[in-house]
Image (cartoon, rainbow, N blue to C red; front, side, top):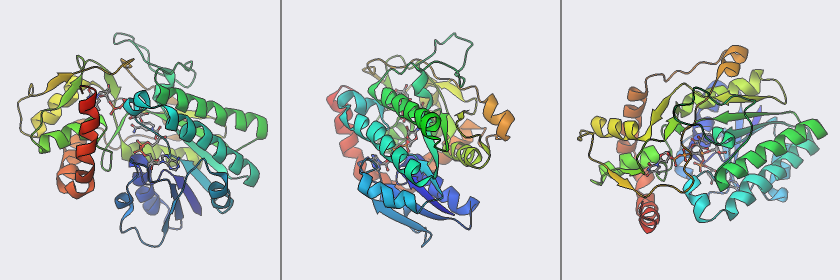
Length: 331
Ligand code: NAD
Ligand code: DAU
């Protein structure tokens, strides 16, 4: 089996490459990744000759077409993924997330290749803190940021290519991931690496916003389950019942790293900041039998902290630039 993994040098994609080699000992993997600021070749180091990295753009049909022609399945992770960046400059989000997904869809249509589209719960907008509801596969789309709007548009392209052209595709919408190889612009690794540097964590606004945390390896197990057992044309929501507000997460990071729980700073809030995400995973659990392995957030977070402590050479070159960008907007 030849698996084409777009965005395989990013956070979730790189973990997926590692997991694929174990789950499918017969598989060869081709990673198509542009190596933007978010891609890191170091995340794919020492994986041997079953993995080939092609540096290229998913929006470039001449690059995409021959790679798709050789693939048995395309797993599409590549995206511009950070909300704060989409507020500074939305243009790469439209190009990569929309034109890139369109380009891949046209190639899988031409070559009749199975496609899995990795998406986000942010397409559904947000929930009130006191709302008993969670997102389900039938929740109406209502994205808030340029990032989530571009992902919503990409999901709708996939649905249309399934219905109009018979493309064999599935979609997954997952909640917030944490774990190794996550870019340090994101919430959890930013605070861990700040503390390693002796800098206080930064909480947007009051810190009451809730995210539904899942370990990246659990997300990726679900993606493989969907590819292997999911029904074509279906959308599966991936989440592990991990709702926590940002203040709780920062306090836990502080405690696990030996600091007082109130040793953080409130900084400027994100414009349009979604209040709460929450996933109803019952379709994934009942239809495909998926269950999360990392159910203890405290130990998952401790392992993640250890990973950033042990792998400073992976993130150190990124830190100054990331913090300069945040400082420029009072964050
Ligand atoms: P990431 O930013 O860490 O990685 C994205 C990767 O895509 C990088 O390696 C980058 O170089 C590559 N890329 C960007 N533009 C490209 C292009 N035009 N052509 C080829 N490669 C390109 O992102 P991530 O957090 O690993 O997210 C991966 C996917 O999962 C995204 O589609 C995202 O929307 C989705 N997702 C993420 C989360 C999360 O919590 N991080 C949750 C749900 C869904
Ligand atoms: O829900 C899935 C989404 O989760 C994915 O689609 C996105 O790709 C991924 O980046 C993530 O989006 P968020 O915007 O929720 O993640 P982020 O890590 O940027 O922020 C998490 C929460 O923490 C959010 O409420 C904003 C807040 N935050 C973030 C940073 C970087 C802070 O309070 N301080 C910070 O320094």
